[in-house]
Length: 453
Image (tube, rainbow, N blue to C red; front, top):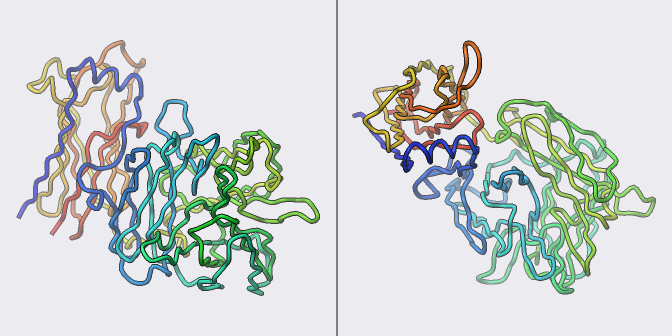
């Protein structure tokens, strides 16, 4: 039986549509409907996709991975949607306070079915969040859950040897209070609010030990757990790079493709002889009595990632960033089943002088047999364009990218509607998430979950 799903995007008149396209306004790429329905799920991985989140909000996501949450890895990214903003970033990860303003976001209450994301009340960097949860391969070393008192640090001995630059570190917290926030990363790296210091961080990594510090006023890291992994080499490695205080450094990686498929890991190094060594102190930023510490990454694209060091920082004389792409076969990957290449075709009308639906830009997505079909009627583009639709196959995610091409000359000084159709044929049975985007991926026209039976 064919399943047909309608996704409607209404634009009040062609003038408003023109303004949206010409201004390049960022539109959330979260699918409509419940958060659970917006997610992408494989056999051992789950992604929420980019989801709008209001300030001062705790949002629960359903992943339903099952099993033991102690086997999970979690990655939380932010997106600043403001024009000229920080784009995909990690500003205030865990939380950041300055002059009574609380920014950033963190995750908490991780279970075998759900995870909760909290955006702080004054945040300006996480208009959208994306949380990914996946089941890792076993680590090469696991501290298990260890009790730690506030205002203390523990030296944990792993004795792995080898080169620490090959390690990947995972640190989690557990609030053991009944009715508390469970497994979490609240105040990760450390947060100081009016002299009350919360959170935990790791430092002093060597090939035999790692130190974990719990801050003096913390109430959410009664236990900590460190896991060390030694994955395959990354697709890109900045190596250790000097960075000055107050500097924003652009690191070119030139990996191409879709940055949403990247996995980013950043470290800091205090190069002082008796310093903190390789560490994650003040990750996402920390302010104490008017002084600012730590680093953040921002503006992740398919060619670069920017790193900012705060003006009073003393723990990040050097930084190192590594990026893996999702399809590599190590613990960091979000596992997708191997699949054959889909058969894809599209049709695009010429510029339409008029349309029955001039006032309504409509996207429909449905299933015909083993094919997924998309129609985008009244899509507003430049009058002189020849329209093309591309398929990005990242099953269960299927992205249809609409773009303008020009056989001669360039854009004209006008806009008009086009009708675009695409067919992804001969798909195996399963659930698929289809998204329809403009070329810059700033405007999501429509999205839907559909099932091929």
